Image (cartoon, rainbow, N blue to C red):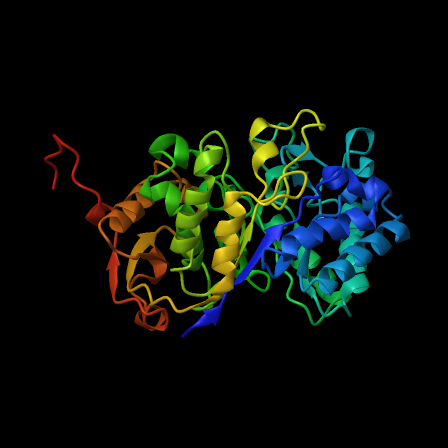
Amino acid sequence: MSSAVRFGVNYTPSQGWFHHWLDFDLDSVRADLDSIAELGLDHIRVFPLWPYFQPNRTLIRPKAVEQLVQLVDAAGERGLDVNVDGLQGHLSSFDYLPAWTRTWHRRNLFTDPDVLDGQAAYLRTLAAALADRPNFIGMTLGNEINQFSAGPHPDPDRATEEQIDAWLERMLAACAEGAPAKPHLHAEYDATWYQDDMPFTPGQAARRGAMTAVHSWVFNGTAQRHGRTSVPSEHHAAYLVELSKAWADEPHRPVWLQEVGAPQPLVPAEHAAAFAEATIANVLDCPDLWGITWWCSHDVSRELADFPELEYGLGLLTNDRQPKDIALVLAEAAREPTYAPAPRSTALVVPADPSVRSVCGPGGPVFDAYFRLVADGARPATVLDVRADDKEHLAARGITEVVSPDQVLPTPQGDTSS
């Protein structure tokens, strides 16, 4: 069946980046939103910085919440729907955590009862402030907040899988209490799918919240290992969409490609448009896709110091709001938003055990087998090993053939074992 795919962008303000909340200028925001709307996109994802909005556990600044509502209303006036990330959290290599969770007040973000009370109150407040806005899509709990729970973060807040599951349940419930009619979700970076000791698991990503969110970045070893024009790099976003479906209980649970971008120097600026075109075309071949939200709207100003170099040039638009070639690629895709991809009838088996999920990451046997199938012209889905013989599950997803990685990869030279 055909479905309409949403096309949007992660909103990075052209003036002051996310620090614009400190000197909120609605006219500047409106100009930014005009430049986004002119591309024909239909939604944005926005990022209130948590310590600016809730500097004390029992102080959620009314003025900050009012400014968020003003931004959402300005977007609505331009035909843009808005998803709001709550717990920021982590953005573009910087951590933004309130002082009441750090140093002398160090408390675990995922397990401390007082912190959980504060987080729930904050998410509930933002959701309630926007609940009656028709262009408010819903809340995302935070931006890649899983990076705080394990390495390589230099000072992680450790938690168990069970504790994270309880945290997700409570925070999603807080969003629903604030805006009960809206779809709320959570989103993590790809360690959820690839890192064995990450307490945020694929099962949680694919089962909790209104839809599954994936964030696709080829600087995770994919482009370094295979190159920017390789099958793995150009299909990485599609791979994450399809990989997520192995863990979903609902056969047609929607998946949102919530972040994807063209990071320099792995994808040089002059090749960003071609990379975007290939990535978008490949992910649109995935059934049950809710939308594509590019990272990001506007470049980071060179007046701001200490960002990783790649962060300065990720925008669809320059810092003075001029569209780049990559913006035109997304605009073209948004003009024809209805797609009808065929079911993916061949499924690659992946292990259900999250303690060995690294086999799905770059260099792992599942990862390599998947892209060998793609290179050979197949359109693979994925299925958990515990469901590989479940005829009802396979039929619900349109899967007629199941293969394991060792059936796909060639036998290594010199290996004569049987």
